[in-house]
Length: 145
Image (tube, rainbow, N blue to C red; front, side):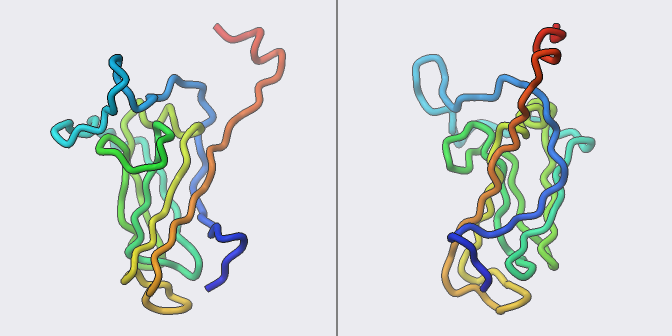
């Protein structure tokens, strides 16, 4: 497998560069909001992230967006499994969409996933694509409402 510094390349679609107040992952009493009885937010078909998992194209990998920045997949964060040729599609709610620029995209490649270049994965690994934060100019900051 091709690796550089232990982190794999992940191709993703363009991310929105919108300032938002993303969830912190805790409620007012400091507890974790990851509640197994909690349903994920409703998803609108118009907000999607699509891309490919590559190290050779990888199918069978879990792709997820870490919206609250706690480095773990929570019930209210979008996730999917990559298909043949590494294709994935994440569907997001409007609130989730507003947090894309501040969220890390993770890919968990389990034992048994298939890399088109090297075959069946025998050792699990994780890849990540860091947030794409935008730097605002003084004019943009002064003209914000």
